[in-house]
View 1 (cartoon, one colour):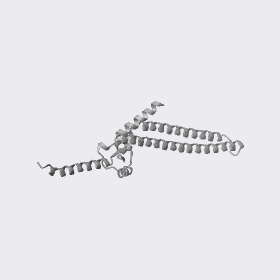
View 2: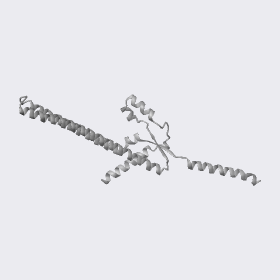
View 3: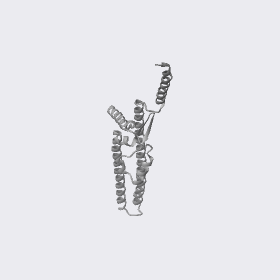
View 4: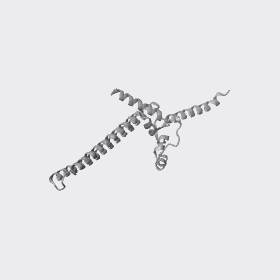
Length: 199
């Protein structure tokens, strides 16, 4: 056998394999994560929903209490002669109560809105941190946000909202091997439980 004839062929094969290996090493590894689904599975989100419900209930009760105080003052004023000094004094008190009540309710609305936005930002940051950790563990270079809608979320959307959500999804297909959603949810919940137990 003439081995000299095979040497160029072997050299070409080796060069081709090396080229493929370099291409594979240089190719960016991409994965996806559905943040909406992660939020639905988060223990922190469940705690947030409960606290939000409690805050809304306290806000409602405060509003009813303020309304009752105003009604009581109006009933008190009705017992005085219009134009009398006591009537004027009580009426001034009522006006102050109305202004205070309006300021109080607006302040509470702003306070609740600020608290809610802060909590949403914290949860989003926790998801991003979990995505980073999972991606680092799997040596993934880029994680795309998938916006597919769960059946539970669909029920809450109007047709127009549902249509808008569909066209906003930037990932049309992702195989199960590149979907990090469940792994991210597990990591977020593990971190949340660890932090809660440390308190």
